[in-house]
Image (cartoon, rainbow, N blue to C red; front, side):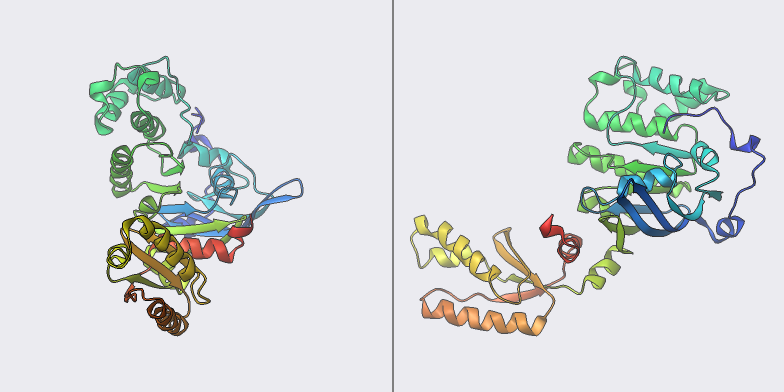
Amino acid sequence: MAPSTYSASNSNIEPLSMINQAQGLAIDVKNLCKKFGNKVAVDNVSIAQPAGSVWGFLGPNGSGKTTTIRMLCGLLEPTSGEGSCLGFDVVKQSREIKNLTGYMTQKFSFWEDLTIKENLDFVARLYEMPNRRKIVEKTLIDLGLEKRQHQLAGSLSGGWKQRLALAAVTMHEPKLLLLDEPTAGVDPQARRDFWQQIHRLSEQGLTVLVSTHYMDEAERCDHIVYLAYGKLITQGTVNEIIQQSGLIAFETQSNPTLEIQQTQSKGTTENTIRGLLSDIQALPSIEEASFYADKIKVSGHDRQAMEQDFVIFNQNLQSRGQPIIYWQTITPTLEDAFIALEKQTGGDNR
């Protein structure tokens, strides 16, 4: 978020939701809507996020994640709806919210011709921070940037740019941190380091709301909100969302490739596996099938129908002289649940 020199403490407007603060809610919005002309970008979204928690926003492109985040931090005025963020009215007190919020966009938005330290010093000047030199030095140490403080921002890798951006948006000690796909295009190790910093800040009481496409990042969140086409489809912990999906998942007990190779020449094995997967996908009870880690994995919602289809499928394999497939039940993953949700909300028809 662009720094502001306005101080919330100078405002004559009292926080709207003292009850929410007493209950420990950082965000409490109801029926939030945003229209751009005739297009509904966000449709009646309600969120109640406790302070100090890390929440993940997930959903396909165009689902309304970024628009919702911008309304929460005061960058966009809702078309309708009500609620509070950090105790202030999201419609009437956006300026107060901005002063207490750090907003980190996907695109690096700082100055590439300045060093890391110069960038942080410049941001501190914009905020008119007292003792800014001490604050900059502390921020460099806290984010592990002190050894690179004289390096030009433009020469940094994606991971280090994101760390600089995180330092800049948290230097004024915000109460809420909004992250809009912050690790897109960043290597896995840098993403892991970034999330360690996020949880360190959360442990210090900072509330974090992050939009992401990465399932491993979603699993690091205390709570997940899934949006599709502007609507809130489901929310909960990882385990709650998997349970809500009602999915049943199976995988093969052994490697079907090796078993097929015992009965066929190596040259025809790959085509046979492709055909096998295609045949499994065609079973009436199977909603999703994939080949990974030398095993076939399937999911659906009707266990009895799936098991009956497996029996019939194995009978057909035997009639062709091919080895039968043995299945074992596994726990569906968060990715399985979201694929099912996206299909249920019309994701395959986009």
